[in-house]
Length: 463
Image (cartoon, rainbow, N blue to C red; front, side, top):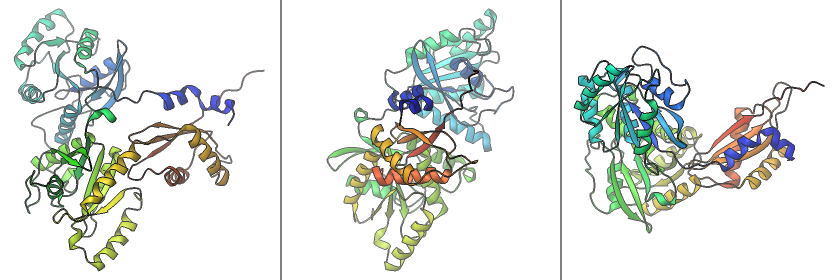
């Protein structure tokens, strides 16, 4: 490929994709009850209007992340939906997303409407935040004048320290608030990936009563967590440090995921959300499936959840001691039919109860983690793609055949590849490239993401 092709592909973007800093940024969660101005504050922090703002509660529903920079320090801002302790239905799910954001954040900014004062809901949320153990900064919003600034002092009663008066809408004292946020940020974020992060974290996932707690006890060689035939014994994620294969692992036993989230209520709903939060803090997941029973929609949804999270994955077919020859035959058919999109997932057949084939689990975890952190040299990747495209060119689209100008692996954990192209590549062709990348470079046990960056047409210069 010529230097001209590189320039046409956008050299600046290539340099960012290939050499950019992939160190995770510290996370600042913006939380508070509905309609206190969280999204307005987020827009003020990031310096542009991206978070949707409307004068009705409940506009923000999911956790939304944005990159921010203040005084040369980069961090991630998480905008959350309104946190109402008395919420039900959809509002309950919105509130739980806010709680998950708190669990994953390094610093929490609690936004309160100073014109209203501390409500009962604010006091309840404040109590939860005090117990989180995280740095909490109390932002007294909608303070547009000196009189309101004096009234904001009443928010000391929340027990979260000094309230910082700010007007997110007009920008009043927003810089002072950001100075406080920067002072509270850790030098390194809570969620770090790499050799220095300590023991690898492994999430144990599966539907209720599939044997997650039994597996954890078998790995530990003793009863660390409660095992009961009744489904749903585990509610909160349970962390356990276990020595296996000459290294220390941190296993996280999670609550069984029951059907769809919208069908859950009360403690089951909160348990499912805590399970999702636990998955986001891990590097690899073991998805347990009851091999003695047909694959269910729940099993497939849990596998999809791991893929969506971008974590490495090992699928462990448990209760193998109960599987006869006929069941093994039908199980292979089910796997071929229902797991056709995840042939890369590593499989082990085990029995958590008897300990059968438990020695195969650690090698599978290590292989999945190695794949998850694998980086393909740019020169080797482009040489491979050149040969691949020469043998199997992309399909013609709109009378023109798109070209792959350049490719690079933008990041690891999970591996992400960017194709700089002259036109749109069909989904089927990108899946073909993904399959061939796996065949050439491995990545067993790890998801990979292949995206494209289409070169913009340059305007013709006037002669």
